[in-house]
Amino acid sequence: MYYLLKVLLTAGLVVAVSEISKRSSLWGGILASLPLVSFLGIIWLYIDTGSTEKVSELSKSVFWLVLPSLSFFLMLPFLLKKGMGFGASFAFSTMVMIGFYLVMIICLKKLGIHT
Image (tube, rainbow, N blue to C red; front, side, top):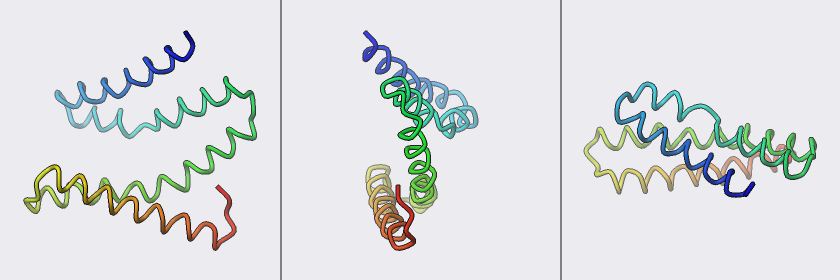
């Protein structure tokens, strides 16, 4: 029952972003930009483990890995405005983001930052 609650609540938030965005990109963007997945992940992790250490580590990892994810949100509108189709723009933006993730992970290791 608990697992089902987690799935339904998490899926409900994704659907809410989609539905709200149909009416207002501003409000959809506000809801989507909130770190709701991180909030829920942290809450579920703490409830499941009771470990503040695990929560702290997850929080640090999220901080560092949000930075490369921003590349997706810069590339996608840029490519769409340049006339590239949605599927190609989405795929290319995702590949760029993955590249930035890899670069970030390498940089963090070189700097001695453990995530």
